[in-house]
Amino acid sequence: MSETEIYCQSGALLSSFCVFAREKSLSGAEFAYGIPGSVGGAVYMNAGAYGGEIKDIISYCDVIDENNEIKRLTPDELCLSYRHSSIMGTEKIIVGAAFSLEKGDKSEIKSAMEDFMNRRKTKQPLEYGSAGSTFKRPEGSYASLLIDECGLKGYSVGGAQVSEKHAGFVINKDNATFSDVMSVIEDVRRIVKEKTGYDLECEPVIISDKM
Ligand SMILES: Cc1cc2nc3c(=O)[nH]c(=O)nc-3n(C[C@H](O)[C@H](O)[C@H](O)COP(=O)(O)OP(=O)(O)OC[C@H]3O[C@@H](n4cnc5c(N)ncnc54)[C@H](O)[C@@H]3O)c2cc1C
View 1 (spheres, rainbow, N blue to C red):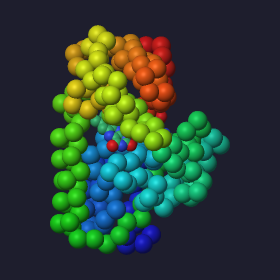
View 2 (spheres, rainbow, N blue to C red):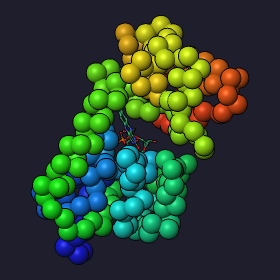
View 3 (tube, rainbow, N blue to C red):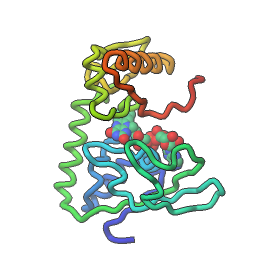
C-alpha cells in the first residue's frame, strides 16, 4: 500500500474517509464530503458530486462473492459509470475498498470540502428528510430544470413534496408515507414525459413496492 492510498472498510462513513484523507493531507476525495452514507454504498452507487466520482479515485475493491470467497476487483471489473457498478444485481458484499489520492495542502483540502458543504446547504433542502436527488441526470439536460420548467416545484401528494428549494428533490414535508413519495415520483415522471419528452429515471434504489 503506497503512502497516498487509503483502505476503508465498507461500513465506514464516506465523510469520515474524507476527513481522514484531509488529516493526512491527501487530496482527491473532497468531492465526496457531504454525500451521506457508507463507503460500501458509495462504491455500489459510484457516488459522485461536483465533478468527482468514486470511479476517479478507487484503486480496488474487496468483496465476498456468491461462493463466499473474498475477491479483489479492479476498477475495470467494477465497471463504474454514472450511478452504476457491476456489483448491482449480484449477491456480492463489498467489504472494503482502497482509494488512490495525491499529496496536497491541508488548508486547501479543508476549504474545498467546506465550499462543497456550503453549496449543499445553500442549494439542497437538507432541512427536510429525502433520499437525495430523486432522479438521475438525463442525457442533455438536468432533472431539476425539467421539473421546474413543468411548473412542478412545490407539487405534493399527502406529505411528500417536490422541494421548492431544489426541484430535483422529493422531500418529506409532513409525515409523508412511502405511497405519497412514490405518487409524487410517478406524477413527476409522467408530466415531464408528456411536456418535454424526457424519461426521468429514479436515482434511489426502490427495494420493494410492498410496504
Ligand atoms: C441529502 C442527500 C444528498 C445526497 N447527495 C448525493 C450526491 O451528491 N451524490 C450521490 O452520488 N449520492 C447522493 N446521495 C445518495 C446517497 O447518499 C449515496 O448514493 C450513497 O453513496 C449511498 O450510500 P449508503 O451507504 O447510504 O447506501 P444505501 O443507500 O444503504 O445502499 C445503496 C445500495 O448499495 C447497496 N450497498 C450498500 N452497502 C453495500 C455493501 N457493503 N455491499 C454491497 N452492497 C451494498 C445497498 O444494498 C443498496 O442497494 C444523497 C442522499 C441524500 C439523502
